[in-house]
Length: 529
Image 1 (tube, rainbow, N blue to C red):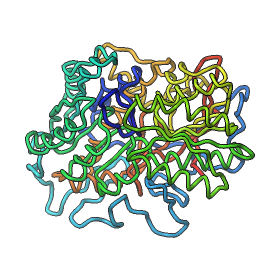
Image 2 (image 1 turned 90 degrees about the vertical axis):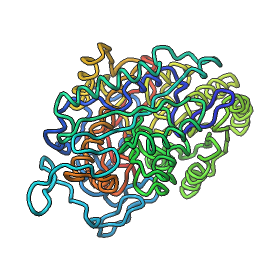
Image 3 (image 1 turned 120 degrees about the vertical axis):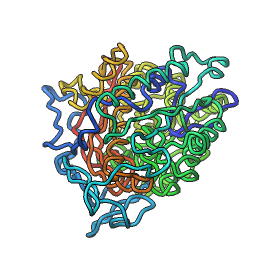
Image 4 (image 1 turned 135 degrees about the vertical axis):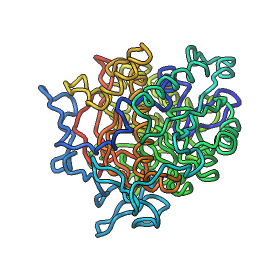
């Protein structure tokens, strides 16, 4: 949701390329696809509850409250009453279907209805239509997708260490996955063409310029990125240039409204994940009788963080506030020690994180240095915190006192949960095409996550394109994708686009465990309170 910068860098919306394990997500920016998407639309996932069977309940295994709705109660077609939208509001307990952010309910004029699961897009009256050049980036035989390529050169010059991720290597990998898609017939008979724009990780202006070039020079149909674009360049693409924007990272809540339905993310918005964290901690009784501190970042994240504080206050909790810079890592690292000392002085014994993983690790280490050992809780604000690289930097006292309210499947292999078939197919395609091996149960699982996240984004692009009819436009594409309903979301729990365009529908509780310095799931997935 934000990222620290090296000196001179600007803030990043919910992405953290400065964590070495996370940067591997750039290896698979958009196009890992194990299925022949040109043959048929993918069906929505079906089946019963996603249940974890614990042979011996570990610490916190009973955290799932009695009566909490489990996965099997999650509808695949519409947001149920109580669903938290990207802006933090809640779907009311009333009849009617919530519209996607920035869109009205009902079928848009001239937009084909989405097919039923397993079906095909409806054929316009008069018989089968010939494929035409229906919008920019679309010809009768091809569709062009923009892919952001990240240049880490300047970051390496000022002290970062990103090797093996040159622009050429990123392009070669992306082209390999595009070849996989095209070898299976492309997308609904159209060949997938990739257009690349290289951006400097430390320079947001290069990202804005890339959006302009995608639209005006490359004339792409849509853009995609797993990691590396942050802040207002997202709006440059989605709002100003009307390029459908498909990304892994969730955005600040206001962006979804401003883009009027052109932003789709496989992770929750900043505000939605933080509201879910607060509500679940309250429901679990975690904050009862505690002195709560809230560590958060400023800048464009301020509105969502103030709304989170308001949610705490509605539940009778007035937190001690600690605010760091969202845009300047050097400044933030100077701010963290006095904030930690202030929290210690005020006897804060439960800290809620809304900061990136670098700041989170530094804060916990400073609290330990000052002799303070609070409990911690976090959300998917920085998804890297929910990977096993993050706990490696934490003091021993942090473990078994840290919870995460997350949509991630991290740690399922450690409790005997099989890898979902969708994720297996994505991983195997990646490994076959690149010769690289990824493992969901290692500290490098952020790389595993990036593979299946990228695979999901490619599937979503194909789903929206197919469901928008024989000759899609960008407007029909975003409408079709917004009504997709439930879908399989790589390394995440139950997810859908219906009434919202940030995907996850459910969360679970995970706990930091010292014996493995890793996260371990403590509950099934359930709808947040």
